[in-house]
Image (cartoon, rainbow, N blue to C red):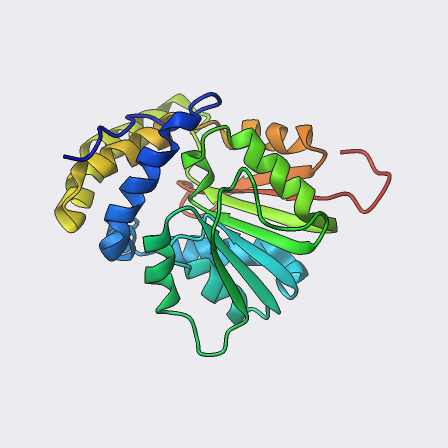
Length: 247
């Protein structure tokens, strides 16, 4: 029997939960993409394209797909002109599933890595994209600090995720969907309803996009955010100062 999964998103001090969350994604890997398409009604691909657009011209350089999973964003960044992609995730099975979808000869470095300790040199990448991953990272402030460390001046990190809605009605709608729909549908597709109960809880326990902006600013990044259509997912962008400006 697998260990009991955490029922809410890991927070600071919850580093001991990381192995359990990793095991969860190992189990989900074979049918993870299908579950994403069904649960989002196909909108997850639209949201990812919005994240690519938010990266701007930085995508045409050396970039990181952080919490890469099955590497949807890796393939999109390559198509957008990325010269090299570092596809980093803590789940070998998720990366293995994604590697089968990469075009032949793609300049992609696929590596199992912890978002809190990136195997990347200081100030060496033009951009970072993270799609639906950071809310599952314990001590997420460490991951944000690592993003700030590895960005070149003018580099940009784009986080696409389900943040906690700021309005009470939106919170009620999101919580109801997460509690009643996500575990049932996710469980039917993958056979692991417990994993989707965790993922739903991770959304309910996450911060708002404006709070995540402040976390980026605390690491010296120039931050802004917005909702993507429909206003379920959000994008937060942090840019490394080119030198001397206020953040």
